[in-house]
Image 1 (cartoon, helix red, strand yellow):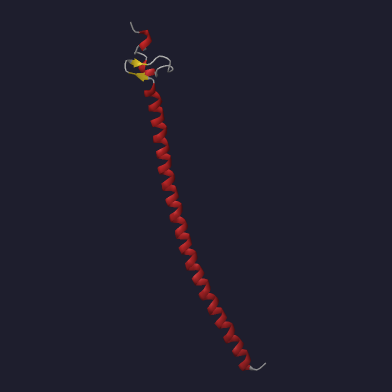
Image 2: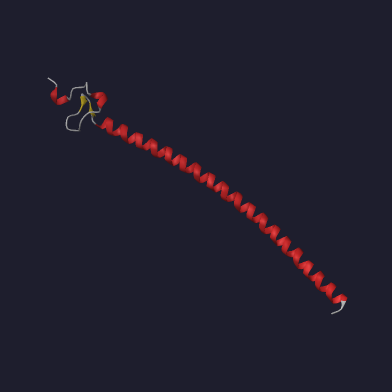
Amino acid sequence: MQLSQIQGLIGSVEEQLAQLRCEMEQQNQEYKILLDVKTRLEQEIATYRRLLEGEDAHLTQYKKERKYLRGFGPGGWVHGTGSPPARCWGRVPRSSRS
């Protein structure tokens, strides 16, 4: 091979190398963008999860309060609805009143 052919091969390889470096840089930028999107989505999911857990706790408390209030009638604790909660032991069930 002659010197000019070798230089031509070297120039071609250097051009391919430059093109590969450019493609790698583009892929690196896309990767960074995707990683940023992933991180933001994970944060958003965590936020929604906290909101749902808070809503779930709120609903659980609401159900407990609703169950507690269901036993009360106009004259106090309604007989036959189960035992009154501990803080209501001083109330007399309607069926026992004179």
